[in-house]
Length: 169
Image (cartoon, rainbow, N blue to C red; front, side, top):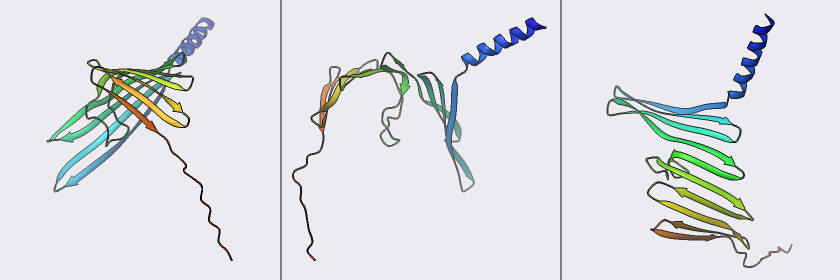
């Protein structure tokens, strides 16, 4: 009997070590117009263990009288010795208005040191390297796209002078 309890305790210990934090979220919209019913639904699943996470976004929409299941994003993110790595397929853009329609297979590696950020992204047929930072309060970045273009950005604010206004009573 003692051996069975010991085996059960060891098995439970190994099971809890392998478990990850899993979050499931989503949104849905159902429409009814003139006897025609349609729906749009999104499902997001994120599994996390330590500093590694896996994200899957699934679109469940109907259109043209059939239901479509579309994998929008599927990627892994992790950090190794201060270097962030993201690999898989995801759409570009931060909002629904600026996102590309199809996810692209890619790998993104980025890090920061001494106030500079460095990033490398490989999309299979093209890649880009970006270096950025802040110089005298001005944010500066330079991006090189493989064999196609370069892009340099600078942004900041300037204070021209101070004005004061006093009211006499």
